[in-house]
Length: 216
Ligand SMILES: Nc1nc2c(ncn2[C@@H]2O[C@H](COP(=O)(O)OP(=O)(O)O)[C@@H](O)[C@H]2O)c(=O)[nH]1
Ligand SMILES: Nc1ncnc2c1ncn2[C@@H]1O[C@H](COP(=O)(O)OP(=O)(O)O)[C@@H](O)[C@H]1O
Image 1 (cartoon, helix red, strand yellow):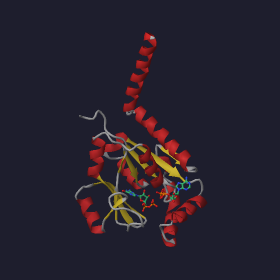
Image 2 (image 1 turned 135 degrees about the vertical axis):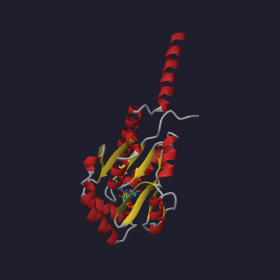
Image 3 (image 1 turned 180 degrees about the vertical axis):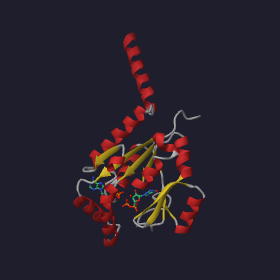
Image 4 (image 1 turned 60 degrees about the vertical axis):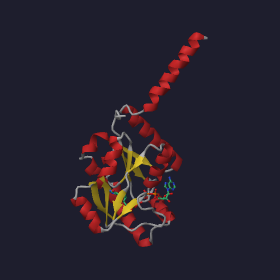
């Protein structure tokens, strides 16, 4: 069956540690039809990260080749490593009508806003409730050493300075509340673009209920 609509690109950005990966995971549990754009990176895997699920971990040479071959939708250097979104899986998902979540920085977001998918994208910036809490979250994640954490904290002000370039900005104070805000936002964006396939079935059910009332 030919899909009637293209999928929506949903961009999540934030300073490191504000909670965007957590929110991306929660949204995908809530709506399993969401697809995740698995980025390629030259940074080493963290404990527990899985190749092909969290990232494609590649060396600099391979990363450079992918760019040369035009296989990246966007790419950027962040914290001294290269990161980029492989084009083919994203295009396949969007063409099949699946919405795709991106966990990328402001540089990648700017590039996507100039790309062919710009008409079908919504960008969301996630702020921490405070800088002290941001640092606490980076430490409590327990996956980076003090030098890496210091580097990320040092870059967070510059990352935050791009907040106004996004369609929406959320403060991630309470996890459940932030997830609910994201769900509402996504539902509203889908509705706005006629992307709520379940609704026609739901309204058909209401009509059925009317008919049943008329006959009783
Ligand atoms: N432009 C771009 N940025 C990315 C991509 N993948 C990850 N990033 C960003 O790179 C930064 C570092 O990511 P990561 O090393 O996973 O650290 P974390 O943000 O602390 O979990 C974050 O701001 C990510 O959003 C990508 O494919 N493209
Ligand atoms: N609202 C929140 N309150 C408390 N801790 C949070 C909240 N959101 C995320 N965290 C925790 O903060 C840490 C960093 O979150 P993560 O999603 O990895 O951030 P990012 O992907 O933005 O770097 C994780 O340990 C996560 O469980």
